[in-house]
Length: 475
Image 1 (cartoon, rainbow, N blue to C red):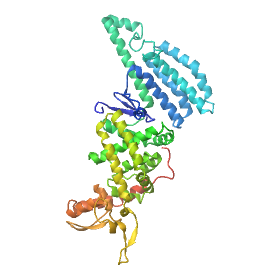
Image 2: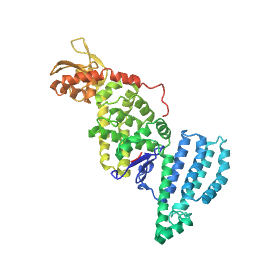
Image 3: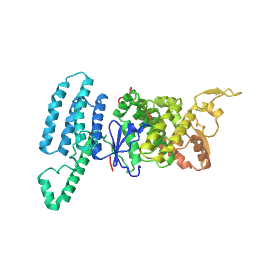
Image 4: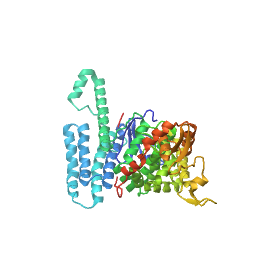
């Protein structure tokens, strides 16, 4: 499906994805009993689209993203835009007058109330009036459908019909009327989109990239993490966006790591992104805090664990992930379901199991005693050395000593450090082997040393988080 889809945007509550073909509901994607396809941009779906605007406004108010004044004016503002699109002046005036007589004073007086439930109830009723109008106008299955929009309505009535008839007879009248209806429906959906879609611009023309990086941008925003954290405590509803969004991102970031297509650029992969996705499945606020201290370009497990000793929140996140692999695996399965069944991106679903395996490998990198700062006395020598020096001498679990190691290169003995290996995106053992064989030249090692010297410590200092954590387009 993704080949024909074009990304437009995400609603601010992260419940819906707007595409060129229709709207995708994130919530419905994890309901095993729901098999609905896209919400297409057709007349009969307009009431559902308007209900999305209602949902976003009530959701933002409940989570203290918008204030009371903005909530109380939301339905009036949308109604004015709607009737301007659909109705002639007299009909528009009649509808607005009816709405004001029914809800205007009620909303004005309720502004002084301290009862949030009552405020939400009255605002919800004012939105239901608007949704009812669109049911009458566009939903033929509604008992209130009056069957005169968008096609059977006589194209602004009167003069334009006469003009169209003179220009081309009844056939031209029908065409003009139909064209008017199509344009009206399009304008309504654009009004809905403008009212609910978050401001974010994708840097590529790839639907999958735009969707995934858009999810990341919104989910890790100041408001996004606050929303996900708050709703994560609402059983059966709130947990869904967190599980789907970060489960999907985890699969996507592992794909980026394994594909070899994202080694550089704006959307380059990093172990930090993978770890942030995984911990955010469990605790979004820890993910937000970790994002604040993320070091770009970390592409080896040994580098991750080396940094964990310097960044406390990273060490905490790794500890939680290591003991929660089974639980995270269940969340990944939900992400796979959304990607495959809702978006139709079958090829990406294959990376669900690879995401689990990658996290298991990450955990192994820290579970070995070789990675612990433990010392022991070597038998018969009285000297102290780390367990990683005495127990692990080679292989994938090899972790370079903190001060580096002297290697015999083709240009003579050189000091090789973990930071230099991170520069090349290699684990410590592979890096050491390549340096000794000459595959990494002495000149390259020297250049890496110059470019990385002090870089990691500087980045950590620059991104050190403040005490506490604040709440946090189109082709």
